[in-house]
Image 1 (cartoon, one colour):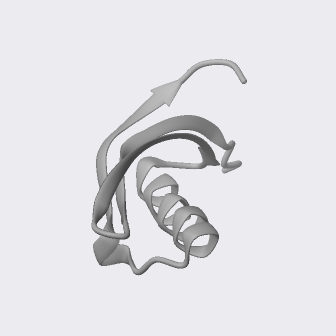
Image 2 (cartoon, rainbow, N blue to C red):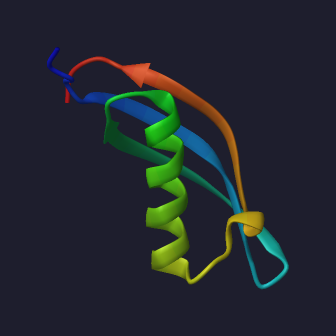
Amino acid sequence: MVMTDLNFEVSGKYQERKVWKPFNKVIVAPNERVAEERTFAVIGSKHHLLRCFIKINTITQVNGE
């Protein structure tokens, strides 16, 4: 069985200096759970945040690139 990666649009918010800022990211992953984990990793490493400061609202699969 071959797993193909899908595109997921992940939207939510993250806290930076007591202000919640919105984000929208397109993440390539085999399923929604992995897309969620990759979102935590990308935003957490870019902004030096723990997971408790990142809130994911929606994860939707998108077609195309």
